[in-house]
Amino acid sequence: MPRTPSFPASIDAHALYVGGTTCSPTAKPGVVDIKNLIIKTYGNRWWGIVTSCTARVTEHKEGRALDIAFDATSYTSRKNANDFLYWLLRPDRHGNGNAMARRLGVMYVIWNARMWRAYRPWLGWQPYTGTSNPHKDHIHISLSWRGARRQTSWWTMGGGALPPQPPSSS
Ligand SMILES: [Zn+2]
Image 1 (cartoon, rainbow, N blue to C red):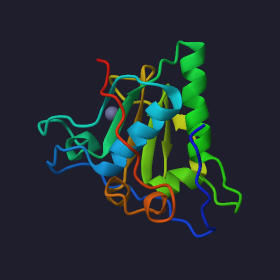
Image 2 (cartoon, rainbow, N blue to C red; image 1 turned 120 degrees about the horizontal axis):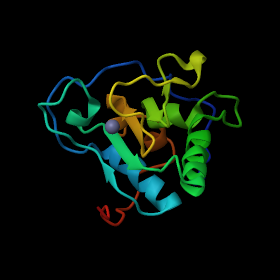
Image 3 (cartoon, rainbow, N blue to C red; image 1 turned 180 degrees about the horizontal axis):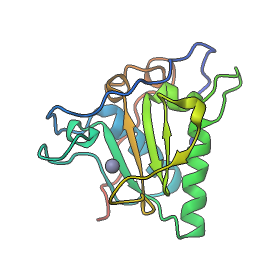
Image 4 (cartoon, rainbow, N blue to C red; image 1 turned 180 degrees about the vertical axis):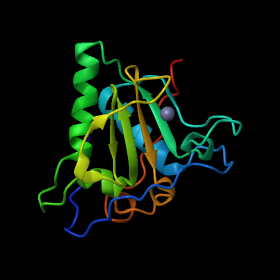
């Protein structure tokens, strides 16, 4: 699991849903930090943040979504993905539910045909019925604007920015 800084009890609210509708195709710093945290913890792998502004509604065209490779058909890769998502969504020592997701400003996650939404946290993981891609070869993470801009408590209370990591191998 990623190294977890010691945080105080105060914590961000769960992110609300704000879909990506504008064109701002540069990788936002909070997203880059999460990519670096995953690579530092689980090793280098392909990833992507920005897509073209001609795309449908997606946080990728605002540079506040991350796709990062984990293979649901591989035991080790699936184990690592689940390890990361357990870390992201477990309660902290203060009893704050979904603590790291809230501190990082995670808005939703899609992985292995399931979806977790910060704006409906009581539902937990739900089946993902997206049309084209069940996300069995990567995790998708969308951040709130506050998370994308490093304005949530991961950055303001202890986690901080991470050093750059090697470029994607693909
Ligand atoms: Zn994605």
